[in-house]
Length: 161
Image (cartoon, rainbow, N blue to C red):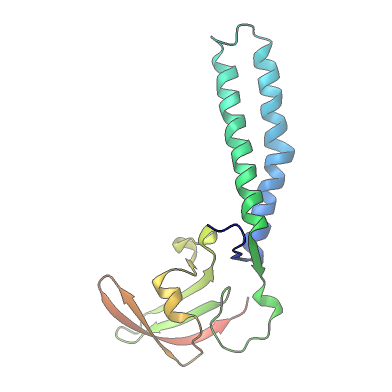
């Protein structure tokens, strides 16, 4: 990915990443440094499983810190709660839609790739459903091209929460 490309992220998603980063730096990093120091005191490092496990954990923590810092530095944070609700589907909105065939109702929030979690009703902005919804307004019909065939949804409600 081009490093100048900003990646959309909800304010909530950015806050969760900042919380994880703070936890890694203030809790996990000092804990693993202490574990390495303690393991060193046990003598020969070649045969010292605790030392090697702690060093491996340190590598994981440092890698995750760099990954989060990179994501946050490339994030374009979008907070829809600070925008007027125009009824239009944009990044960060929560959309309630009704399947035109079955009358089943679904609600999804459109979020960044890293935040998506279908079990929590959060779908990636790059998913087929989100791509069909973006730019539409309440009352519009969105055609979602799904593997099992095209499905039409009527946009019932758009929340900026």
